Each structure stands twice: as structure tokens, then as C-alpha cells.
Length: 312
Image (tube, rainbow, N blue to C red; front, side, top):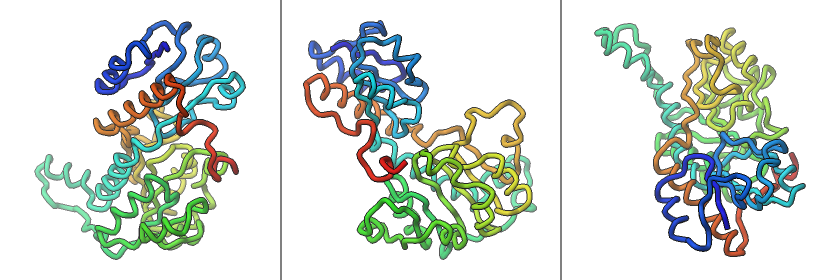
């Protein structure tokens, strides 16, 4: 079976493919490829699929899959799959890095030291202990963030209508309604997939439900937050600030005010940007391709057979 690797995969994952010869072989010719290994930069739509007439399987080494038109692949009899497990730990780590960077004002502190001002005019932070973290989406990433929050002495509440009560108990997160969570959380952290239900979940009305001192954290998908409404909420003090790894347009246009807003801390979509996550996702994708080549069942195929996917 001929496999084309269209984006960067780890050396360890590529070694797995070489070791599987002659079951599979790597090709650079799209028209003869039967399996495509991709990441998020490769958009799979009807136009692209015309270039790969022999493809039977597409695997994206990412947890997200909004770059794949799974209805189109399904129509053409092509199996599409993603790798949901590999990036969870690194994304959870970044979430807490953003939370700590905001709370301890690390950017301002660093600038002070570099400019020989030391602690002059630095605002004293509150500290995390005793404060409430509201998690929207208690899945793979959200549950890890909940566990991390407890080590800092934070109170944790979560909104997720699709997970069992046992996970709330396991993560010691209090189940909350969405609006109740917004009204009572010092930090609101988003960990949901991008669906019709979650697009612009944070918008003018929902920002209005948050505390004026609250901070928004987003390490899931940019369009979950309405960018224009966020700018307004920051401008008028509806919320105190936001720390985000994802935005609606990536990268943003040159000169866009989102790049310089004083109440906004941004990172360039690096939730999964660790050597560990990169290697894990690469190997997970390759193993799915090898399972397919052996005639075995491929896990995590699209459309997902889970309640939130079926509903949206």
C-alpha cells in the first residue's frame, strides 16, 4: 500500500513506516497514493480529492479535524481519521502556562527586569489559591486542566453536558450550568471542539454574564470566541483580560489591533507544539495507517460516533 506524507512527521514515525516494508511504501506521487498522512495545513475538500483518485484512507495527526470535509470523504468511500489522544497533555500544560503568565504578570515582570526597573509599578497579583476556575468542556484536555488546578488550591467547576457524572467525580469538578459557570468563575477556560453548537459560544451576551475581573483562556479553537465581541468586551471592561493560543484568523492580518491590545496575551497556536506531542501524534497516525494496510479496524474515524458530534 502506497502512503504519501504531506506534512512533517517525526523521525520515529517514519521509521515505523520503513520497518513495515513491503506491507507499505512511501510515495511522493499524489495520484498513486492510497493513504495520506497529513496535519492541519492540508485542507481536504472536493477540489483536493480530485487530485488523489486512489486514496482510501486519510489520517490527520491532529486532535482537530475541521480541515477535513468528512462528508465529502464519506461520499467518495474514503476513510478519514484523527489522533485525539496525542496532544491533550501539551495543550493542558499550555493552558496553565497562560493562566500563570497572566496571573503572575510574567510579561510585564520580564520587561521590567530588562529595562532595569525591577518591581517598579508592577501590580501585585492575587494568587490562584481559593480562586475559581470554570472549565467549558471536561474532555481529554479539560479533565487534565482540572487536575492541575487542584494542585494550585483552586476551586474547579465545569460545564459539559456530554460527559458522565463519574468524570466530574474523578476530576473533583463541580458540575455547573454554562451561564452559572460564567457568572461565578474567576477564570473561564475553553476546551471544546469547533461545531455549530460551539462557534462563537463566547459572544457579546455571554461575555456580559462574566465577572468584570474574570479572565478568558482559549486553547481549543479560535472561532469558539467571537473576535469582534471579545475586543469590545476588553475595551469596555466587561472582562479583565484574555489569554489565548488560538484566534479566528491565524495568523492575524498585519497591523490588526488584536496584536497590540494591552489586555490580551497571545501565543501562536502552540498547544500541540512540543516534541512529545509531535512524536506521539505522528506515531498514532502512522499506526492507524498500518492497521488499515493490515485490514484491521481504524480507530477515531469520522464522523465520530459520540453524542456531541451526532447532535451538532
